[in-house]
Image (cartoon, rainbow, N blue to C red; front, side):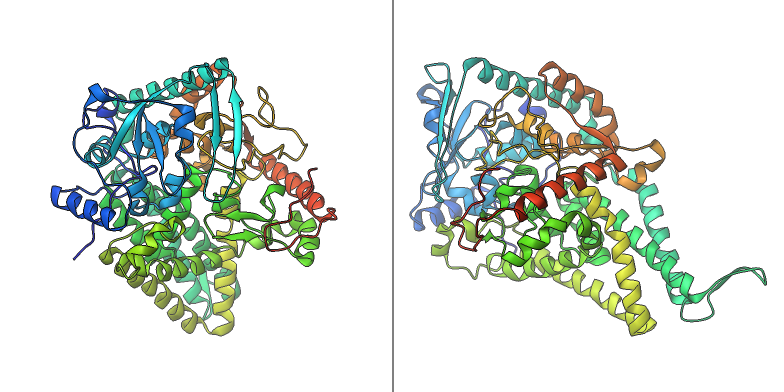
Length: 594
Protein backbone atom coordinates (compact mmCIF):
# COMPACT_ATOMS: atom_id res chain seq x y z
CA UNK A 1 0.00 0.00 0.00
CA UNK A 2 1.02 3.64 -0.23
CA UNK A 3 3.07 4.71 2.80
CA UNK A 4 1.99 7.94 4.44
CA UNK A 5 4.80 10.28 5.47
CA UNK A 6 4.30 13.04 7.98
CA UNK A 7 4.09 16.39 6.24
CA UNK A 8 6.40 18.53 8.28
CA UNK A 9 7.37 20.98 5.53
CA UNK A 10 10.30 23.22 6.33
CA UNK A 11 10.46 22.55 10.06
CA UNK A 12 8.26 19.49 10.57
CA UNK A 13 6.48 21.25 13.35
CA UNK A 14 3.16 22.90 14.04
CA UNK A 15 1.42 24.69 16.81
CA UNK A 16 -1.31 23.60 19.20
CA UNK A 17 -4.76 22.83 17.82
CA UNK A 18 -5.93 26.25 18.90
CA UNK A 19 -4.49 28.40 16.09
CA UNK A 20 -3.59 32.09 16.38
CA UNK A 21 -5.79 34.39 14.22
CA UNK A 22 -3.31 34.91 11.37
CA UNK A 23 -2.42 31.22 11.09
CA UNK A 24 -6.07 30.32 10.57
CA UNK A 25 -6.16 32.19 7.28
CA UNK A 26 -3.06 30.66 5.74
CA UNK A 27 -3.64 29.96 2.01
CA UNK A 28 -4.53 26.55 0.67
CA UNK A 29 -1.09 26.03 -0.84
CA UNK A 30 1.87 24.08 0.46
CA UNK A 31 5.43 23.39 -0.64
CA UNK A 32 5.18 19.75 0.37
CA UNK A 33 2.53 17.07 -0.08
CA UNK A 34 -0.02 17.22 2.70
CA UNK A 35 -0.92 14.06 4.56
CA UNK A 36 -4.10 13.78 6.57
CA UNK A 37 -2.93 11.96 9.66
CA UNK A 38 -5.54 9.62 11.08
CA UNK A 39 -5.58 8.55 14.72
CA UNK A 40 -4.48 5.11 13.58
CA UNK A 41 -1.46 6.49 11.76
CA UNK A 42 -0.55 8.67 14.77
CA UNK A 43 -0.55 5.54 16.94
CA UNK A 44 1.66 3.72 14.44
CA UNK A 45 4.18 6.54 14.43
CA UNK A 46 4.11 6.66 18.22
CA UNK A 47 4.84 2.94 18.42
CA UNK A 48 7.68 3.24 15.92
CA UNK A 49 9.19 6.16 17.83
CA UNK A 50 9.04 4.16 21.07
CA UNK A 51 10.69 1.19 19.34
CA UNK A 52 13.54 3.43 18.20
CA UNK A 53 14.04 4.60 21.81
CA UNK A 54 13.32 8.24 21.04
CA UNK A 55 10.95 10.67 22.68
CA UNK A 56 7.32 9.56 22.54
CA UNK A 57 4.90 11.53 20.40
CA UNK A 58 2.35 13.43 22.44
CA UNK A 59 -0.66 14.17 20.23
CA UNK A 60 -2.98 15.19 23.05
CA UNK A 61 -4.01 18.79 23.53
CA UNK A 62 -1.52 20.58 25.77
CA UNK A 63 -2.79 22.20 28.99
CA UNK A 64 -2.09 25.89 28.49
CA UNK A 65 -2.14 26.54 32.22
CA UNK A 66 1.02 24.46 32.61
CA UNK A 67 3.06 26.23 29.91
CA UNK A 68 6.72 26.35 30.75
CA UNK A 69 8.65 29.53 30.02
CA UNK A 70 11.63 28.84 27.76
CA UNK A 71 14.26 31.45 26.92
CA UNK A 72 16.05 31.76 23.59
CA UNK A 73 19.24 30.76 25.36
CA UNK A 74 17.69 27.54 26.68
CA UNK A 75 16.03 26.64 23.38
CA UNK A 76 19.26 27.22 21.45
CA UNK A 77 20.90 24.38 23.38
CA UNK A 78 18.28 21.90 22.12
CA UNK A 79 19.69 21.49 18.61
CA UNK A 80 21.26 18.05 18.56
CA UNK A 81 20.05 14.77 17.11
CA UNK A 82 19.19 13.53 20.59
CA UNK A 83 16.88 16.42 21.39
CA UNK A 84 15.76 19.11 18.95
CA UNK A 85 13.46 22.04 19.71
CA UNK A 86 12.25 24.99 17.68
CA UNK A 87 9.61 27.69 18.03
CA UNK A 88 6.61 28.82 16.02
CA UNK A 89 4.57 31.90 16.90
CA UNK A 90 5.94 31.99 20.44
CA UNK A 91 5.37 28.28 21.16
CA UNK A 92 8.31 25.88 21.56
CA UNK A 93 7.99 22.33 20.19
CA UNK A 94 10.06 19.18 20.50
CA UNK A 95 10.48 17.87 16.93
CA UNK A 96 12.97 15.09 17.70
CA UNK A 97 10.65 12.15 16.84
CA UNK A 98 9.80 13.53 13.41
CA UNK A 99 13.17 14.40 11.94
CA UNK A 100 13.23 11.29 9.78
CA UNK A 101 9.63 11.65 8.56
CA UNK A 102 9.93 15.07 7.00
CA UNK A 103 9.01 14.79 3.28
CA UNK A 104 11.55 17.47 2.40
CA UNK A 105 14.29 15.79 4.41
CA UNK A 106 15.87 16.04 7.84
CA UNK A 107 18.22 18.80 6.73
CA UNK A 108 15.35 21.29 6.68
CA UNK A 109 14.69 20.66 10.37
CA UNK A 110 18.28 20.61 11.59
CA UNK A 111 18.95 23.94 9.87
CA UNK A 112 16.28 25.52 12.09
CA UNK A 113 17.07 23.65 15.29
CA UNK A 114 17.16 25.72 18.44
CA UNK A 115 15.69 28.75 16.70
CA UNK A 116 12.42 30.61 16.13
CA UNK A 117 11.26 29.11 12.81
CA UNK A 118 8.01 31.06 12.44
CA UNK A 119 9.01 32.70 9.16
CA UNK A 120 9.84 29.42 7.46
CA UNK A 121 6.69 27.67 8.64
CA UNK A 122 4.47 30.47 7.40
CA UNK A 123 6.37 30.65 4.13
CA UNK A 124 6.05 26.97 3.26
CA UNK A 125 2.85 25.72 4.88
CA UNK A 126 -0.86 26.21 4.77
CA UNK A 127 -3.08 26.26 7.82
CA UNK A 128 -4.51 22.76 7.40
CA UNK A 129 -1.02 21.22 7.34
CA UNK A 130 -0.10 23.03 10.54
CA UNK A 131 -3.30 21.92 12.25
CA UNK A 132 -2.68 18.29 11.28
CA UNK A 133 0.82 18.26 12.69
CA UNK A 134 -0.39 20.04 15.83
CA UNK A 135 -2.18 16.82 16.74
CA UNK A 136 1.04 14.88 17.13
CA UNK A 137 3.88 17.30 17.90
CA UNK A 138 4.75 17.77 21.54
CA UNK A 139 4.48 21.31 22.85
CA UNK A 140 7.06 21.97 25.56
CA UNK A 141 6.51 25.61 26.50
CA UNK A 142 6.29 29.28 25.61
CA UNK A 143 9.21 31.24 24.18
CA UNK A 144 10.19 34.26 26.28
CA UNK A 145 12.94 36.84 26.12
CA UNK A 146 16.10 36.29 28.17
CA UNK A 147 15.98 38.04 31.51
CA UNK A 148 18.94 40.31 30.71
CA UNK A 149 17.20 41.60 27.58
CA UNK A 150 19.75 39.94 25.32
CA UNK A 151 19.95 36.78 23.31
CA UNK A 152 23.02 34.87 24.49
CA UNK A 153 22.89 31.92 22.14
CA UNK A 154 25.34 29.06 21.83
CA UNK A 155 24.69 26.68 18.96
CA UNK A 156 26.01 23.14 19.22
CA UNK A 157 25.50 20.19 16.93
CA UNK A 158 26.72 16.68 16.29
CA UNK A 159 29.49 18.13 14.09
CA UNK A 160 30.78 20.16 17.07
CA UNK A 161 30.23 23.51 15.35
CA UNK A 162 29.87 26.24 17.95
CA UNK A 163 28.72 29.78 17.20
CA UNK A 164 28.20 32.35 19.92
CA UNK A 165 26.71 35.82 19.72
CA UNK A 166 25.33 38.39 22.09
CA UNK A 167 22.74 40.71 20.61
CA UNK A 168 21.83 44.00 22.33
CA UNK A 169 18.20 44.57 23.15
CA UNK A 170 17.79 47.20 20.43
CA UNK A 171 18.82 44.72 17.74
CA UNK A 172 16.63 42.03 19.25
CA UNK A 173 13.67 44.39 19.07
CA UNK A 174 14.61 45.23 15.48
CA UNK A 175 14.44 41.55 14.53
CA UNK A 176 11.05 41.15 16.15
CA UNK A 177 9.81 44.27 14.34
CA UNK A 178 10.92 42.88 10.97
CA UNK A 179 9.23 39.58 11.78
CA UNK A 180 6.03 41.38 12.73
CA UNK A 181 5.96 43.51 9.56
CA UNK A 182 6.38 40.52 7.27
CA UNK A 183 3.80 38.58 9.25
CA UNK A 184 1.30 41.38 8.70
CA UNK A 185 2.20 41.48 5.00
CA UNK A 186 1.62 37.72 4.74
CA UNK A 187 -1.81 38.13 6.30
CA UNK A 188 -2.62 41.00 3.96
CA UNK A 189 -1.63 39.00 0.87
CA UNK A 190 -3.74 36.10 2.06
CA UNK A 191 -6.78 38.30 2.53
CA UNK A 192 -6.27 39.74 -0.96
CA UNK A 193 -6.26 36.21 -2.38
CA UNK A 194 -2.80 36.47 -3.93
CA UNK A 195 -1.94 32.92 -2.92
CA UNK A 196 -5.06 31.53 -4.57
CA UNK A 197 -4.59 32.97 -8.06
CA UNK A 198 -1.92 30.60 -9.35
CA UNK A 199 -4.31 28.44 -11.33
CA UNK A 200 -3.50 26.25 -14.29
CA UNK A 201 -5.46 28.40 -16.74
CA UNK A 202 -3.02 31.28 -16.17
CA UNK A 203 -0.31 29.19 -17.83
CA UNK A 204 -1.93 28.80 -21.25
CA UNK A 205 0.40 31.38 -22.84
CA UNK A 206 3.47 29.74 -21.30
CA UNK A 207 2.35 26.26 -22.37
CA UNK A 208 1.53 27.46 -25.90
CA UNK A 209 4.93 29.11 -26.24
CA UNK A 210 6.81 26.11 -24.85
CA UNK A 211 4.98 23.54 -26.99
CA UNK A 212 5.48 25.75 -30.05
CA UNK A 213 9.23 25.68 -29.41
CA UNK A 214 9.09 21.88 -29.05
CA UNK A 215 7.02 21.17 -32.17
CA UNK A 216 8.98 23.60 -34.36
CA UNK A 217 12.26 22.22 -33.04
CA UNK A 218 11.19 18.64 -33.80
CA UNK A 219 10.09 19.61 -37.31
CA UNK A 220 13.33 21.43 -38.18
CA UNK A 221 15.62 18.81 -36.67
CA UNK A 222 13.90 15.98 -38.53
CA UNK A 223 13.94 17.98 -41.79
CA UNK A 224 17.70 18.30 -41.44
CA UNK A 225 17.92 14.66 -42.55
CA UNK A 226 16.66 15.66 -45.99
CA UNK A 227 16.98 18.75 -48.17
CA UNK A 228 16.00 21.25 -45.49
CA UNK A 229 12.98 23.56 -45.51
CA UNK A 230 11.81 25.80 -48.33
CA UNK A 231 10.37 29.01 -46.88
CA UNK A 232 9.85 30.73 -50.25
CA UNK A 233 9.92 28.35 -53.25
CA UNK A 234 12.99 28.90 -55.43
CA UNK A 235 13.94 31.96 -53.35
CA UNK A 236 14.61 31.16 -49.67
CA UNK A 237 15.53 27.75 -48.37
CA UNK A 238 16.93 26.64 -45.03
CA UNK A 239 19.77 24.20 -45.52
CA UNK A 240 19.91 20.97 -43.50
CA UNK A 241 22.70 22.45 -41.34
CA UNK A 242 20.65 25.58 -40.57
CA UNK A 243 17.64 23.41 -39.77
CA UNK A 244 19.70 21.28 -37.39
CA UNK A 245 21.19 24.16 -35.41
CA UNK A 246 18.00 26.24 -35.40
CA UNK A 247 15.86 23.32 -34.32
CA UNK A 248 18.36 22.37 -31.62
CA UNK A 249 18.40 25.93 -30.30
CA UNK A 250 14.59 25.97 -30.15
CA UNK A 251 14.67 22.70 -28.23
CA UNK A 252 17.09 24.33 -25.77
CA UNK A 253 14.63 27.20 -25.31
CA UNK A 254 11.87 24.66 -24.70
CA UNK A 255 13.94 23.05 -21.92
CA UNK A 256 14.52 26.47 -20.39
CA UNK A 257 10.86 27.49 -20.55
CA UNK A 258 9.44 24.20 -19.30
CA UNK A 259 11.75 24.45 -16.28
CA UNK A 260 9.87 27.54 -15.08
CA UNK A 261 6.59 25.65 -15.02
CA UNK A 262 8.29 22.71 -13.31
CA UNK A 263 9.66 25.11 -10.72
CA UNK A 264 6.20 26.50 -9.99
CA UNK A 265 4.75 23.00 -9.79
CA UNK A 266 7.45 22.08 -7.26
CA UNK A 267 6.30 25.00 -5.12
CA UNK A 268 2.66 23.94 -5.57
CA UNK A 269 1.75 27.30 -7.09
CA UNK A 270 0.35 26.10 -10.45
CA UNK A 271 -2.91 24.46 -9.39
CA UNK A 272 -2.65 25.16 -5.68
CA UNK A 273 -3.12 21.46 -4.83
CA UNK A 274 -0.13 19.45 -3.66
CA UNK A 275 -1.00 16.17 -5.36
CA UNK A 276 -1.97 17.76 -8.68
CA UNK A 277 1.16 19.88 -8.76
CA UNK A 278 3.36 16.87 -7.99
CA UNK A 279 1.97 14.91 -10.93
CA UNK A 280 2.27 17.98 -13.14
CA UNK A 281 5.89 18.18 -12.04
CA UNK A 282 6.38 14.54 -13.01
CA UNK A 283 5.11 15.34 -16.52
CA UNK A 284 6.99 18.57 -17.19
CA UNK A 285 10.04 17.66 -15.11
CA UNK A 286 10.64 13.96 -15.61
CA UNK A 287 8.91 13.11 -18.89
CA UNK A 288 9.53 16.32 -20.87
CA UNK A 289 12.87 17.48 -19.49
CA UNK A 290 14.53 14.47 -17.84
CA UNK A 291 14.91 16.03 -14.39
CA UNK A 292 13.47 14.23 -11.35
CA UNK A 293 10.92 16.31 -9.50
CA UNK A 294 11.86 14.48 -6.30
CA UNK A 295 15.53 15.41 -6.73
CA UNK A 296 14.49 18.98 -7.49
CA UNK A 297 12.46 19.21 -4.29
CA UNK A 298 15.39 17.86 -2.27
CA UNK A 299 17.86 20.43 -3.60
CA UNK A 300 15.62 23.43 -4.14
CA UNK A 301 13.81 23.31 -0.83
CA UNK A 302 17.17 23.05 0.91
CA UNK A 303 18.33 26.07 -1.08
CA UNK A 304 15.33 28.09 0.09
CA UNK A 305 15.87 27.11 3.71
CA UNK A 306 19.65 27.60 3.73
CA UNK A 307 20.24 30.25 1.08
CA UNK A 308 23.98 30.77 0.50
CA UNK A 309 24.93 28.68 3.52
CA UNK A 310 28.35 27.25 2.77
CA UNK A 311 27.51 24.02 4.62
CA UNK A 312 23.92 23.44 3.56
CA UNK A 313 23.05 25.11 0.23
CA UNK A 314 23.72 22.68 -2.66
CA UNK A 315 23.15 25.45 -5.23
CA UNK A 316 26.48 27.08 -4.34
CA UNK A 317 28.50 23.91 -3.68
CA UNK A 318 30.25 23.35 -7.00
CA UNK A 319 33.80 22.63 -5.91
CA UNK A 320 36.25 21.79 -7.32
CA UNK A 321 35.01 23.35 -10.60
CA UNK A 322 33.77 26.66 -9.16
CA UNK A 323 34.56 28.41 -5.90
CA UNK A 324 32.05 31.13 -5.00
CA UNK A 325 33.38 31.77 -1.48
CA UNK A 326 36.70 30.92 0.18
CA UNK A 327 34.92 29.36 3.19
CA UNK A 328 33.56 26.60 0.94
CA UNK A 329 36.96 24.92 0.68
CA UNK A 330 37.27 21.92 3.00
CA UNK A 331 33.84 22.66 4.45
CA UNK A 332 31.58 19.68 5.15
CA UNK A 333 28.57 19.61 2.82
CA UNK A 334 25.53 18.42 4.71
CA UNK A 335 23.73 17.85 1.40
CA UNK A 336 26.41 15.88 -0.45
CA UNK A 337 27.77 14.34 2.78
CA UNK A 338 31.41 14.98 2.01
CA UNK A 339 34.15 17.55 2.42
CA UNK A 340 34.46 20.00 -0.46
CA UNK A 341 38.18 19.73 -1.16
CA UNK A 342 40.51 20.91 -3.91
CA UNK A 343 43.78 19.40 -5.09
CA UNK A 344 46.68 21.44 -6.45
CA UNK A 345 45.53 21.05 -10.07
CA UNK A 346 42.00 22.30 -9.42
CA UNK A 347 43.40 25.00 -7.18
CA UNK A 348 45.45 26.31 -10.09
CA UNK A 349 42.56 25.94 -12.53
CA UNK A 350 40.06 27.86 -10.42
CA UNK A 351 42.13 31.01 -11.03
CA UNK A 352 40.50 31.04 -14.47
CA UNK A 353 36.97 30.14 -13.36
CA UNK A 354 35.61 33.43 -14.71
CA UNK A 355 36.76 32.33 -18.18
CA UNK A 356 35.17 28.89 -18.20
CA UNK A 357 32.06 29.91 -16.21
CA UNK A 358 29.74 30.07 -19.24
CA UNK A 359 31.12 27.03 -21.13
CA UNK A 360 30.71 24.80 -18.08
CA UNK A 361 27.17 26.02 -17.42
CA UNK A 362 26.40 25.24 -21.05
CA UNK A 363 26.79 21.55 -20.22
CA UNK A 364 25.53 21.67 -16.62
CA UNK A 365 22.22 20.09 -17.56
CA UNK A 366 23.86 16.71 -18.07
CA UNK A 367 24.77 16.79 -14.40
CA UNK A 368 21.08 17.22 -13.54
CA UNK A 369 20.31 14.01 -15.42
CA UNK A 370 22.97 12.15 -13.45
CA UNK A 371 21.80 13.58 -10.12
CA UNK A 372 18.19 12.61 -10.91
CA UNK A 373 19.16 8.98 -11.45
CA UNK A 374 21.31 8.95 -8.31
CA UNK A 375 18.41 10.39 -6.31
CA UNK A 376 16.02 7.61 -7.35
CA UNK A 377 18.62 4.95 -6.57
CA UNK A 378 19.48 6.34 -3.14
CA UNK A 379 15.85 6.88 -2.11
CA UNK A 380 14.79 3.34 -3.04
CA UNK A 381 15.50 1.89 0.40
CA UNK A 382 13.65 4.71 2.15
CA UNK A 383 10.59 4.54 -0.10
CA UNK A 384 10.25 0.78 0.11
CA UNK A 385 11.28 0.62 3.78
CA UNK A 386 14.33 -1.51 3.04
CA UNK A 387 16.34 0.59 5.48
CA UNK A 388 16.57 -0.86 9.02
CA UNK A 389 14.76 1.23 11.60
CA UNK A 390 17.91 1.37 13.70
CA UNK A 391 19.70 3.30 10.95
CA UNK A 392 17.10 6.07 11.19
CA UNK A 393 18.87 7.35 14.28
CA UNK A 394 21.36 8.82 11.81
CA UNK A 395 19.91 12.08 10.50
CA UNK A 396 22.11 12.17 7.41
CA UNK A 397 20.64 8.92 6.09
CA UNK A 398 17.14 10.37 5.85
CA UNK A 399 17.36 13.94 4.57
CA UNK A 400 15.93 13.62 1.05
CA UNK A 401 12.47 14.28 -0.31
CA UNK A 402 10.30 11.26 0.42
CA UNK A 403 7.91 10.04 -2.24
CA UNK A 404 5.34 7.30 -2.02
CA UNK A 405 5.91 4.02 -3.84
CA UNK A 406 3.56 5.00 -6.66
CA UNK A 407 5.32 8.35 -7.03
CA UNK A 408 8.72 6.64 -7.09
CA UNK A 409 7.59 4.21 -9.80
CA UNK A 410 6.09 7.10 -11.77
CA UNK A 411 9.36 9.01 -11.63
CA UNK A 412 11.30 6.00 -12.89
CA UNK A 413 8.82 5.36 -15.70
CA UNK A 414 8.73 8.98 -16.87
CA UNK A 415 12.51 9.33 -16.81
CA UNK A 416 12.70 6.15 -18.89
CA UNK A 417 10.18 7.67 -21.30
CA UNK A 418 12.30 10.81 -21.66
CA UNK A 419 15.45 8.87 -22.45
CA UNK A 420 13.60 6.55 -24.81
CA UNK A 421 12.51 9.59 -26.82
CA UNK A 422 16.03 11.05 -26.76
CA UNK A 423 17.58 7.79 -27.99
CA UNK A 424 14.93 7.50 -30.70
CA UNK A 425 15.72 11.03 -31.92
CA UNK A 426 19.47 10.37 -31.97
CA UNK A 427 18.93 7.15 -33.93
CA UNK A 428 16.79 9.05 -36.44
CA UNK A 429 19.42 11.74 -36.92
CA UNK A 430 22.46 9.51 -36.87
CA UNK A 431 25.39 9.57 -34.46
CA UNK A 432 27.00 12.84 -35.62
CA UNK A 433 23.89 14.95 -36.10
CA UNK A 434 22.35 13.47 -32.96
CA UNK A 435 25.39 14.45 -30.91
CA UNK A 436 25.32 17.97 -32.39
CA UNK A 437 21.65 18.31 -31.55
CA UNK A 438 22.13 17.24 -27.95
CA UNK A 439 25.22 19.38 -27.32
CA UNK A 440 23.90 22.55 -28.96
CA UNK A 441 20.42 22.33 -27.45
CA UNK A 442 21.80 21.79 -23.97
CA UNK A 443 24.28 24.62 -24.41
CA UNK A 444 21.41 26.96 -25.24
CA UNK A 445 19.41 25.62 -22.29
CA UNK A 446 22.41 26.48 -20.11
CA UNK A 447 21.16 30.05 -19.97
CA UNK A 448 18.81 28.80 -17.25
CA UNK A 449 21.77 27.96 -14.99
CA UNK A 450 23.24 31.41 -15.59
CA UNK A 451 19.93 33.02 -14.66
CA UNK A 452 19.75 31.03 -11.42
CA UNK A 453 23.31 31.65 -10.27
CA UNK A 454 23.28 35.39 -11.04
CA UNK A 455 20.94 36.02 -8.13
CA UNK A 456 23.21 34.52 -5.47
CA UNK A 457 26.86 34.08 -6.49
CA UNK A 458 28.04 37.65 -5.80
CA UNK A 459 25.95 38.15 -2.67
CA UNK A 460 26.68 37.47 1.02
CA UNK A 461 27.36 33.95 2.28
CA UNK A 462 26.99 32.50 5.75
CA UNK A 463 28.85 29.84 7.71
CA UNK A 464 27.88 27.67 10.68
CA UNK A 465 24.32 28.26 9.49
CA UNK A 466 21.39 28.56 11.82
CA UNK A 467 18.10 30.35 11.28
CA UNK A 468 19.65 33.65 12.33
CA UNK A 469 22.17 33.30 9.47
CA UNK A 470 25.61 34.30 10.66
CA UNK A 471 27.66 35.89 7.87
CA UNK A 472 31.06 34.55 6.94
CA UNK A 473 32.89 37.47 5.40
CA UNK A 474 32.78 40.10 2.69
CA UNK A 475 32.04 38.22 -0.50
CA UNK A 476 31.58 40.87 -3.17
CA UNK A 477 34.02 41.47 -6.00
CA UNK A 478 35.06 44.83 -4.54
CA UNK A 479 35.61 43.39 -1.06
CA UNK A 480 32.59 45.12 0.44
CA UNK A 481 29.40 43.80 1.93
CA UNK A 482 25.79 44.87 1.77
CA UNK A 483 25.51 44.45 5.53
CA UNK A 484 26.03 48.06 6.52
CA UNK A 485 24.57 48.18 10.02
CA UNK A 486 26.37 45.21 11.61
CA UNK A 487 29.87 43.79 11.96
CA UNK A 488 31.16 40.55 10.47
CA UNK A 489 30.19 38.43 13.51
CA UNK A 490 26.60 39.67 13.57
CA UNK A 491 23.59 37.43 13.07
CA UNK A 492 20.62 38.75 11.11
CA UNK A 493 16.94 37.95 10.88
CA UNK A 494 15.58 35.51 8.26
CA UNK A 495 13.93 38.08 5.95
CA UNK A 496 16.95 40.34 6.18
CA UNK A 497 19.25 37.50 5.24
CA UNK A 498 17.20 36.79 2.12
CA UNK A 499 17.84 40.37 1.00
CA UNK A 500 21.56 40.06 1.71
CA UNK A 501 21.96 36.76 -0.12
CA UNK A 502 19.60 37.34 -3.07
CA UNK A 503 19.61 39.78 -5.99
CA UNK A 504 16.81 40.75 -8.38
CA UNK A 505 17.42 41.12 -12.11
CA UNK A 506 15.93 44.14 -13.85
CA UNK A 507 14.37 43.18 -17.18
CA UNK A 508 12.14 45.03 -19.66
CA UNK A 509 8.50 44.03 -19.69
CA UNK A 510 8.84 42.35 -23.07
CA UNK A 511 11.47 39.94 -21.67
CA UNK A 512 9.49 38.69 -18.68
CA UNK A 513 8.77 35.44 -20.54
CA UNK A 514 12.50 34.81 -20.89
CA UNK A 515 13.02 34.91 -17.14
CA UNK A 516 9.82 33.11 -16.17
CA UNK A 517 9.10 35.61 -13.43
CA UNK A 518 12.15 34.49 -11.44
CA UNK A 519 13.97 37.75 -12.06
CA UNK A 520 12.06 38.72 -8.90
CA UNK A 521 14.21 36.30 -6.94
CA UNK A 522 14.11 38.15 -3.63
CA UNK A 523 10.33 38.36 -3.67
CA UNK A 524 10.16 34.66 -4.53
CA UNK A 525 12.45 33.72 -1.65
CA UNK A 526 10.40 35.73 0.81
CA UNK A 527 7.07 34.28 -0.40
CA UNK A 528 7.92 31.02 -2.24
CA UNK A 529 4.28 29.90 -2.57
CA UNK A 530 3.19 33.08 -4.32
CA UNK A 531 2.33 32.75 -8.01
CA UNK A 532 4.89 34.37 -10.29
CA UNK A 533 2.42 36.82 -11.84
CA UNK A 534 1.98 38.48 -8.43
CA UNK A 535 5.71 38.96 -7.81
CA UNK A 536 5.97 42.35 -9.65
CA UNK A 537 3.12 43.71 -7.52
CA UNK A 538 4.96 42.53 -4.41
CA UNK A 539 8.09 44.62 -5.10
CA UNK A 540 6.88 47.98 -3.68
CA UNK A 541 5.37 46.26 -0.63
CA UNK A 542 8.67 44.58 0.20
CA UNK A 543 10.68 47.71 -0.56
CA UNK A 544 8.58 49.62 1.96
CA UNK A 545 9.48 47.18 4.75
CA UNK A 546 13.13 46.97 3.73
CA UNK A 547 13.46 50.75 3.66
CA UNK A 548 11.78 51.05 7.07
CA UNK A 549 14.43 48.78 8.61
CA UNK A 550 17.36 50.06 6.53
CA UNK A 551 17.88 46.72 4.78
CA UNK A 552 19.69 47.06 1.42
CA UNK A 553 18.09 45.52 -1.67
CA UNK A 554 20.19 44.88 -4.75
CA UNK A 555 18.68 44.98 -8.25
CA UNK A 556 20.81 45.04 -11.40
CA UNK A 557 20.24 44.73 -15.12
CA UNK A 558 21.16 41.39 -16.69
CA UNK A 559 24.47 42.58 -18.20
CA UNK A 560 25.54 44.39 -15.03
CA UNK A 561 24.71 41.33 -12.93
CA UNK A 562 26.85 39.15 -15.20
CA UNK A 563 29.77 41.56 -14.92
CA UNK A 564 29.41 41.63 -11.14
CA UNK A 565 29.47 37.83 -10.96
CA UNK A 566 32.49 37.55 -13.27
CA UNK A 567 34.47 40.10 -11.23
CA UNK A 568 33.53 38.28 -8.04
CA UNK A 569 34.68 34.93 -9.47
CA UNK A 570 37.90 36.45 -10.75
CA UNK A 571 38.70 37.84 -7.31
CA UNK A 572 37.86 34.56 -5.55
CA UNK A 573 39.78 32.50 -8.10
CA UNK A 574 42.92 34.56 -7.59
CA UNK A 575 42.49 34.50 -3.82
CA UNK A 576 42.25 30.71 -3.74
CA UNK A 577 45.04 30.10 -6.25
CA UNK A 578 47.47 32.39 -4.40
CA UNK A 579 47.06 30.64 -1.08
CA UNK A 580 50.19 28.78 0.05
CA UNK A 581 48.30 26.46 2.38
CA UNK A 582 48.12 22.84 1.16
CA UNK A 583 44.55 21.81 0.65
CA UNK A 584 43.65 18.21 1.37
CA UNK A 585 40.44 16.22 1.47
CA UNK A 586 40.15 15.49 5.17
CA UNK A 587 38.63 18.83 6.07
CA UNK A 588 41.42 19.67 8.56
CA UNK A 589 43.14 22.40 6.55
CA UNK A 590 41.46 25.74 6.09
CA UNK A 591 42.34 28.70 3.91
CA UNK A 592 44.11 31.45 5.72
CA UNK A 593 41.98 34.48 6.36
CA UNK A 594 42.32 36.98 3.58
